[in-house]
Amino acid sequence: MKALVGLISAVSIPLMLLNMLGGVVSGIWLAVLGEWGAIGTGILSLFVSTSLLGFALMPGLLFAAPAAFCMEKGKSFGLVFFAALSSIYTMGLITVWCCAVLFYFVRDATATTLIPLLIWSYGVATGPWSYMASKDQGQGGEGFASTMATFLAELAYVVIILLILFSPITKLGAIKVFGGFMAVGCILQLTLAVLLQREQKRFAERSAILYE
Image (cartoon, rainbow, N blue to C red; front, side, top):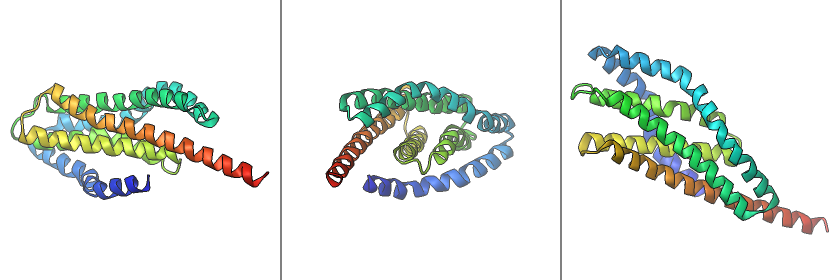
């Protein structure tokens, strides 16, 4: 897991620059072009989307709680089953949200406004997930899972932006690309859950030996 964290940290550097400067640069760019509607919609979305998405994530807790119970009891099949359902729901929600934001902002884009709208939409789409991931920091596996999901969402969005700019891509194609990144996230989260369970099992066994 440490190696994966290191890889994410290295690749995150350009994403961090985009996160810090993208919104400001694209916002000024859009203002110069007179795209005040896109600016207003984006700012309003950033204010309300975090709460709405947090509420939308709540059904996933129906799967997360049984997964945690199975991990505690050492039931591998139940852990994988419920963790998979929870991960699929969360990653599916991220995909739907980010693709919906992308399609909304570029629906009427022109050759002049396409680039700033893409960058602006990136912040609107990924900003809420970044904020929620920052709140989960320090919570062990849950915090890492949130960070990983956000990282993959940001990376997927950048890849789709590049595809839009440099190659023809349909809406369905964009959804498939984004979904592919999220599928990788599901696999990594399930792997993490299984590794954590094994680590807990080893710790319990060592503790039992020490207290015998």
